[in-house]
Image 1 (cartoon, rainbow, N blue to C red):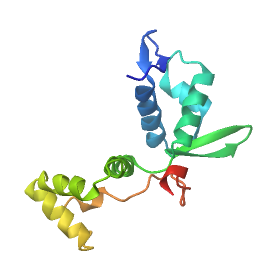
Image 2: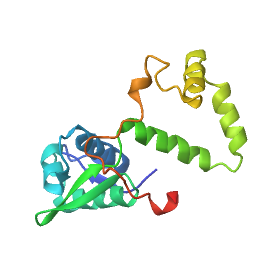
Image 3: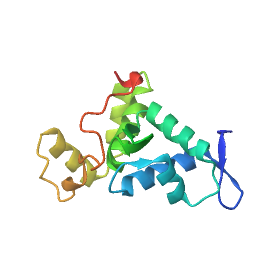
Length: 154
C-alpha cells in the first residue's frame, strides 16, 4: 500500500493515487489548462497548496501532464484523454513482462467476440468498421500536440 497520502475535506487521509485521479479528472474536464490554484479551488478540500503543486509535479514527471508558464505560475494539462491513459497503462503492463508473446496471447484469448472483431478491424487499419470506433485515439483538447515522452518511454 502506498503510504504517501493527502488529507481531504473531511480530514481523512486518502492515497496519493486517489488524489491524482481526482486531479486528472478535473484537468480533463477543464476547457483550458489549470494552475495549481485552480486545481486546489476545484478540489474544494483542505489540501495545502504545496500538496497540490507536489501532486501536479509528480504527475508531470510521470508523463501524465504538460505544463506551460501562465503568468507567475504554471498551468497544467493532461497529455492525453482517459482512453489514451488506459492504453498507456495496458502497454506498460505488457512491457513489464519479459514474455510479450504470452501476455498478448492470453489477452487475445480473453477477449469477447465483439472485442476480437474490433481489434481485427483496427489491426487491418479500418478505424471506422465498428460502431464504437469513434471513441478512441482522440487527444484531449488541452493536450500538448507533441508531448515529450517520459524518459522511461523512449
